[in-house]
Image (cartoon, rainbow, N blue to C red; front, side):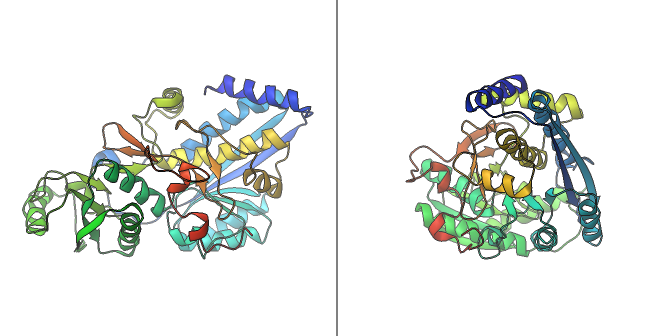
Length: 395
């Protein structure tokens, strides 16, 4: 939906509800924790310096389109910090009076920052950490998750594989903790949707450069040998959250098979080729503003700030408690260029949303797939359902 149409719809609903527009100043912040990273396998995946922050800039424009008619103003500041600097950066944000904070950080840092923000009455939006525990036993009442969990991503892949009748999986995991966590999500997805893990192997991360002149030569020799002799399978599922081998799997297998997961067909929140459901205008506005293509990190931050904007529009309040209460209520929904409106799970703060399956060239499919049903919403077939979550902070 374009910006002016969004504004018109919001104004129409406010008119019919009898709500009186009042001036509201909405101040938010994006805190991005930057970690040491190896260069990606492909130069196409080099991280932009404004990753995430660009999504915030577009969100302020979009929120401001409606806000101008209602007397609402939006200002989002952006902050980059190392893990060692993150606490001080958060303290500075809180000292400035900001109580709506979007965080891009790994799970351990995110939990610490969330607890620190909670002591000041702030509401935090998780825009990157996929760890299932954050939606489970380690959930926090003041933490809402816009980023999908590992389980949501794994379930999205699993549904497509099962829909294609590719039920026999060869799972290849990385050796790092994040890889193993993602691998465990794929194991649960296989059990959940009736796939069979015919074999599992671990590809050891031995370090070293992945982008030397001879890198592809070594991979071309090593990976086929590593994959040799596997039991009969329909598809290779890659669990490589740290991005050191999965990108090489297609065309380097011993037995030619589709690759899904961290390589080949990948689950993402957004990609630059996605055009359905009005996404073309989202893409063109983002590209005009930033002079580059959108990344999932940008979309996640944009979506978090749009949650804030939509809630302020409906409630007329920018207070964290009011935003949290409305976002978790049955009244909240938000258009997200994915074919259906997104909502929050009121038992663990996770945003329900479709997951795009992207092959590096186009959006191949979107999960949940046709035929996967749920008593409340098909979106709840992705990730932890209410009976599966040990989260009690939202009770």
